[in-house]
Length: 501
Image 1 (cartoon, rainbow, N blue to C red):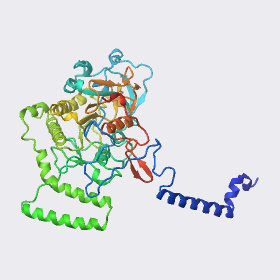
Image 2: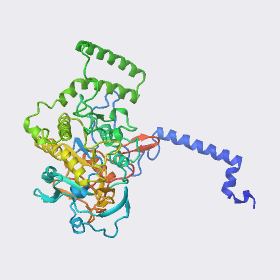
Image 3: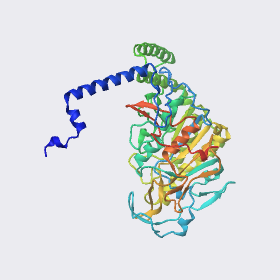
């Protein structure tokens, strides 16, 4: 049988030169006609729509003032958001997800437990390393690992059936903070400031406060702008490490500084006139202008010396380890930024791009009783103090607080018998403040905290809900990039209406 006998009649027609030229002409003509009709608004649907049938909403941004405040899609419960991120994966079964069966079956290996997990062979079921007690009027069971946060359980809305796509830390951090496991996508904070801008013209719209020990595993990707305009990347500094080069040289007077700034403004304005609509150029100019304003605004917001002793005591700034004291200062800085109207503040509790096995973050593959205890000593009181302080000042009325980690930990020990491995199938985060229920728990993991079983929520759902609380429709907030209408939740996600107040 010849090779030609394998070709269908349609295939033969495609090989015909006359048919090929005819079809090409019709196709190119149709493309041109569609373009002309689209420009004149004569197509049935002149606006692009997503797979949901909704038209995308791209905020109208003034290139000369990218940080200007913009309207939300609908009236939002929250105007600002504080994200407290704990890299390394906090053990939900040792903190907020009470499972009596772990004690009942302690030391056993019930059927259904995998023989091998992320880091090797699995061991036996292990009861919580800290006792759980009922807290507040709600009676929420919270462990003694985080007693200060436990005291505030009546203010929190817990999500116990979260699950994620990965059990690797870099990808897990990326997924939680950007909606994708790969790098190069905009962070949550970048999406929010792209949509809403800022209420403060003297400070960045989005501030990332790194842990005193340094960057988290995925580094600046956790607060990067990805393919969004550069103006919307997070500005990272901390109480320990202020932005560089803020101080004016002693040989340079204030008058010299002012005249130089005025000259630069004129030159930048003329340069921008030559390239109207160049968002990258406008973003660079805006960033430099903001940097100039930060020379006076940042030292003021970072000066916590005038904070009353009662506040320093509340945050635990004068007790405990040096790391706790430094993290407590970061927490006070976070509150001061929220007070100043910064749209998004992301506070990190944990670091180390190369791992740390519970020493620099919550990744406790061994000696979890010691390593988790060390991290909790740093995190618990300052974090609880921060949320309590926001509440006392009435800032929770307009601020959403998000406490989160990239995934959970297993209910059984690893083969070494002292640590818990990564668990992507069930973990706990909580919300507090504007727009969410108080003293409420949504979703359940199974009797061992191994897998989510009811009220299962993806990270897409989690991010969709946070955007909703900021007055943003996650299905419509988009940015056109490489031929696609990109969004934080990709093509997934549903708002978790059960947690809304």
